[in-house]
Every structure is written in C-alpha cells, then in structure tokens.
Image 1: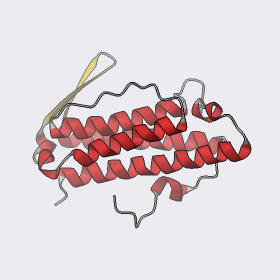
Image 2: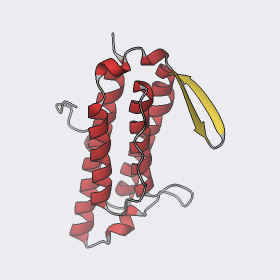
Image 3: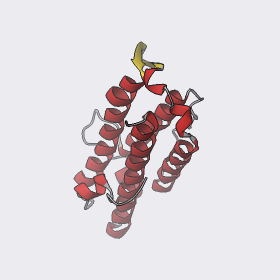
Length: 171
C-alpha cells in the first residue's frame, strides 16, 4: 500500500529538483546568449499568465503548503520577492529542505484529515487524499510545466527528459 508520505514528499521533491535543473539551463542559456536574466524571469506564455518567477513561487508554495497541511504543522512563509535565478534556486532549496524535515509518521492518517483552503474568497474543503491528488499535484505539475514551457518558448534547449529528470535519481 502506498503511504501518504510516499505519495507526497518524494514526488514533490522530484518535481522541484527537476524545476531547479530547468532553471539552471535557463540561466546558462541566458548567459551564453548574453540575454539579460530579467528577460527570461519576466517572460510569460501569454499576457494574462504569470511570468516565470511567479510560476516557481507558486510551485514551491503548493509544495510546502501540501507538506505542512498534511503533517498538520505551520506552513513556512516566504516573501515572494525573488528577482534572480539564484534567488529562485534558493527558494526551491529551502522548500526541499522543509519537505525533508517532514517525517513519514507525521503523515500517518493524513489521507483522511480534513484540509480547508481559501482561494479568492472561496473556501475549499478536501480530505487529505483528495487535497493531494486533486489539488496539489495537478497544480504543482501545471506550474512546473508552465515554467518549462516559458523557457522552451524562449529558446532554451529543453526536452521531456528535463521535465521528468533522471529516472535513476532517488528523491
């Protein structure tokens, strides 16, 4: 049987680790092509979508929020003031370190825990399992994918393997 911990922490860490690698390629591309970093950091797929920086912030917010809510602990607060690739990498590393601090026993029974979140003045209630599978994971993958697509659209040579990461990497 798959534990809530196994369904939560390793996949979130893997997605964030892959996002860090994608951002690293974006920074290297900008440096090689002599493109101001802000051009990529502020790039969007479409005018009404968030820029790359915000995509990373949301992916990390969803990840730390999931770990904390499912473990019934306080969610770490971040300033959302990252303005460089290195600051985004630090945010990802901080989020992974937080997820590393959560122990499997903290998520025992979390699948049935009631999780309530407020989104745009609307309160959403989930079981822990539904929160993870129907809210968190789709959102994390959406924002990581969008970050990937922003960089790819701007010329960064990325492929499916960059999104998936190394399958042999144990996270």
